[in-house]
Length: 639
Image (cartoon, rainbow, N blue to C red):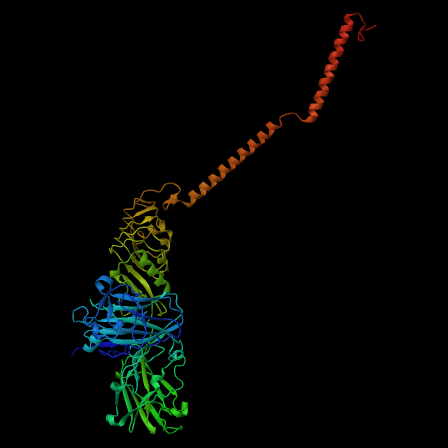
């Protein structure tokens, strides 16, 4: 007989040819302003008969669209199309990445999954579904025939804590060659305090293992009827879960059209319809059984309302709540809230020994009554990759132009039960709270990009192999983590110099051969080969400065001027500048002297007087000589 297994989820089977009212119904306004209803595989927005607007397919990382083989059998447009992810083209891991969800927020995630032999192979796939780092649902082939043909809804509540990541990922991981499928995805923001979040904590996901409306005649809620639930929850009839009493004549259904108080209130916003019907018995105990995974703990919510108008005071209806044989509570609804008022209790169930969770209501006074049951598996969030290392890996994905076939989507390392990104090895960090990248092996993958500077954020990287690709650009200066032991960048088209940062690492293997590197090789890096390691720098015509390579020109290293060369040029420039300044100074002084070449004014006056005296003296002597020639006695001649 075909077997269908779905872990961590409660499957709600849709019904073929389900009648739905096409009357216009006011849409339910999201409580917190954010909701996505994505019709996977659809190329346009649509509005269904319940006035829900379904968005065209978006936020996906890859995949192919398809239509179910019998679309007329499905009630809603969101159930007729799908997206599937063939691993040969898109890798084993593909995601829907929701952008910019507010931090410290809480959501209902609801998916519809259907196969309906869309690929004509008559073999439903095996795959897992995870939100961020934690697996929610597991589908294993062969599926139950009705589920394969009609599809199933699954849902869970999860929280987003303060995070540096920019997206929230819903990821699908296919096993072997199977292609995961998804027909619709809904994400609805809810109250952060809902379902006793203060006790369970933000680090736990609540996965629906059963949401039952007692006394209802069928499934109701968003996608099934016009009845509203502000959280987008759908409820199903309790008939298939009720195990006692065995005599159905002892079971009685109560219902009312009267309003019930205390409903649709924060933080849980339980809808009124849950409390307007109930189941009671005329004698004996009322019993229910829900299938569970014994390895997990559960949060059980039980809903009550006294809608029997014959009960008019406290003490008239009292009963015990017994879960897996343990009496967890004694309930008197009228005593707690009175008549026609909603009342709920919840209990934590741990250490199960079987795969069945039993709920029994045992009479104390009168007869027990119940309106609804919810059962959620408490699944702790699995460790995820350190946010900074996620940033680094996504930057490398872009810079290295990683092909779609390698499936580099979602968290690089998580969930831990899945393979990490192809070519990536991860380890738990020292405090066992997060995952880190330890090895990247992408040799001979036809990569044609460059190595992103963000690789410096991979502080735990031990081995990096990007050999035999067509990578260009320079080796990032941030590559040189102390953890790095093996580095193989051979047979690429890398240019520039070898960064000094590699000297600070713990390298034992360095293969940089057959690139376009140039400049002086750092001495400490070359010493790797001397101290028992291995280094190969051949095939780089521009490298120099170590044995087996040419000597570097004076004042030249790493493809440029060395520090000494820069200092020498600086001093030379200073000397030349000083000489230029001296020449300018001398020239300026000379030019000033040429302009004021005449003697000072005082010296010119003295010279003029002297010249005048000499002329007068000369004239006097001429006159005396003239008189002497005429016979006048000379004053200088003795009488």
